[in-house]
Length: 122
Image (tube, rainbow, N blue to C red; front, side, top):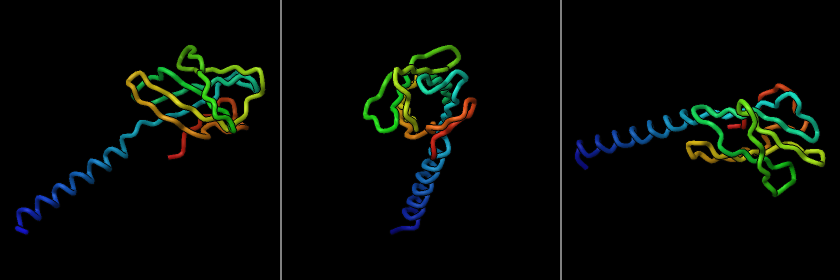
């Protein structure tokens, strides 16, 4: 292998690593804040996603296989009302206006605090 070829390979490898690290550091942050009025049958969550807006948000309760649509309210607050007490921890699935899709499991604990902001583990 020539010196130029070896040098080119090293540069390419460094460029790939730099791109991977840059991509890892650029992942937008999402947070879920439990809003006032939430109770055992009503969950209101302010969902913030850096650089984008939620188009759809779905909720899945602990132990359930079913995703249910949340209703978009004012200021980015998403709500869900249930006839039965809700079972946390709560999982969220969303689609942003820019087309980003993601699922976060066990984000909001069963015994959440009103006003507390929860973020998925990275």
